Length: 476
Ligand SMILES: [Zn+2]
Image 1: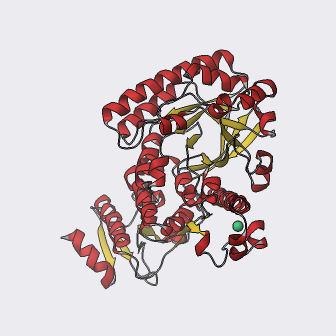
Image 2 (image 1 turned 180 degrees about the vertical axis):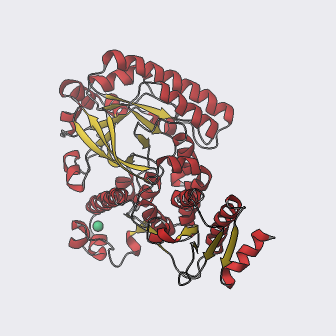
Image 3 (image 1 turned 90 degrees about the vertical axis):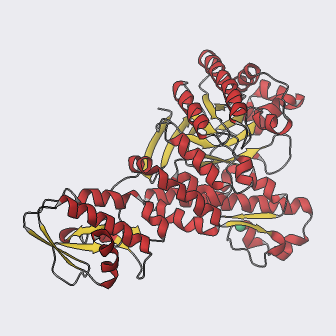
């Protein structure tokens, strides 16, 4: 099997992607290698935590020396690595320059010949906010090229995998159409493309809408790559929406501009007095010392830090998936930027999707703010409570755990059977006092459904002032 999922949390997963150069654990971050630029050598990437790289086959093809080297010795030997390497096709150049001097057939065959582990067709990256007509015309051409790539791939592949780009600009119906087509093509990886302009503009909600639209139709058995997503502050959020592959050109691009990546955002070297990091670079230099270095030395060191910080965050995301604490991690991370909070709130409209993927057995529920109300655990609890058998004619429901009752009220969860007061999720939910009204409203909605279900019984409510206010509303 090419892709195997081993752990799940929220819509995120830990998986194993098998390539002809070994297995990669996902979610994975692929550093982008520009073979024309002498920077951190590809062979150094393992020390930061990289298991897979991505490079641009179009740049290799266009540079005579690189092309000949790659055709003669293979891509891996050209880069000096034995780890899996994915190749992009030049569609980024297409977006920047408007044209490339190669056909889809040529670039796909070239990637096969040089032994790329993941081959990418020359898709058309329609920019955000394009008209529906333009986006559709581009998408039809992209889909034609994908089918052509599939055909070349089926006859020429030497064990390499095929990536199927998903386009459609900011039009969700087209993104879905593209994803449906991707399901039909025998690709191994799906790559959501042309989101970099949105990420650069912090339009995270638009990216979230695209990702969720794609995830709502794409086969869950395949890994999904969010092309160009390389800032550690968005790893938790998009991993929780089901992204398995990330790539970072950011580590180098930001470094050349004296920008320092952290999981909570970007810092400017000029404004740092203390490094908030303990990677080898940050332990060896003070910000002041780093500012005194030459431009090239400084860029190299910041890029190293950027890689250490990015892989550290990716490991934290994976640990959160293993511990079923990904919601908690996301809810912490999004607090570093208002647009991240806004982006995460998009999941509110995708309850069924979350419900389908999020595991139901976990250990802990930390309520960290209103966004915690979107977790499936709450609605699942409320649905399950409706099926609890009640023998007695009179049911006592209390908001005070000190009072003897059949059921208790808990913010967000609503009605909790007495014998489940120590069980996950309601019994394991840690919440603060003076919790948001939304948590009461959600609980009261659960109570309303419970009372409706037991309409033939007498229900006695023993509730305090705070609860009474909300309950009065449903009783009127
Ligand atoms: Zn550091």
